[in-house]
Length: 406
Image (cartoon, rainbow, N blue to C red; front, side, top):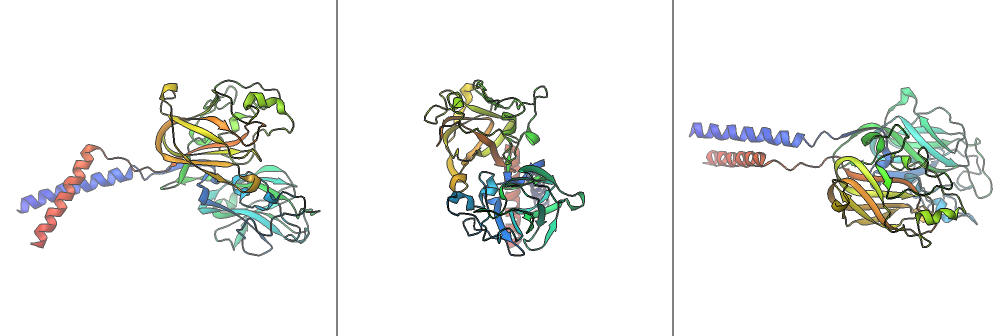
């Protein structure tokens, strides 16, 4: 009996070791560098604003946002800053006509290492960048920044650390307030840093800086292509200015913008009703077969959420693509409702195609960013031998328990 029990103990020990090894294979996470934390899941980032020494205000539709006569009411929604889709402008009453210190920022799901912050604004003015881990005690992590509509601000070397809150602060008396504008507005506040995505964190596998390679000869991203080249009458599609930014992972609007009235581009991108041309597609090569569960398409300004079809493939061969059924959620508010987030059952794929686009406007299909997401950790399916060991260990433990009970 003793020898039998010892044999069972050994079996259980072997099974336990196999279980630990099997679990460890999914626990390393995914390391990222120079990664925009706005690429986290939708509910992992929240925008806020505030004035003087007050607490953060989370309601984007509150009185802090401007909605004066003649202004688009969409400009009062601070949460659009989280998606980089539409401007938030302060109300003159909120800023005391330019005399109060006010700020706008984003809260992350947890402290993340931040090395720089992308800032895009309207009505430029000098500003500081502050950070916090509780929304109350703040440290200034940047030098005073000159007025600039779009810039990447490095964090001071001695201030590089993990933070949960990041804000852009305008000191009273240093900016202009006129008419219905209480001061400078923000399109996006984008903290960037390095770290490890683990557990239920979503990874943007389309991020070219972390998971792809550029073609050094022309700086184009070879993993982002169309089914045919577009004529380029206005210079939107040259190698240094267009598609190479659509998968760079930044929500700052660093891609070429549409020019009002340039309707000559319409036949090359969409038809007169705003539909993508028959047979055209956009394709992203993730560089390797990945487990993916979401795709997000971010449009410009009022080129709001479109309908489209998603296809995935492990090989990239035309015959191997199959469509995925997804649930679409539109993020952003008012005219900033420009993020189409598509959730679907977990798929294994290296290639993602977007086809059959129908857009709300007919002036071209303009992107800011395309993101392809999967969980940072997917529990592996154990090999048959491992399953047998686990079962044997369980039986051994059960028999041992029965012996003890006797």
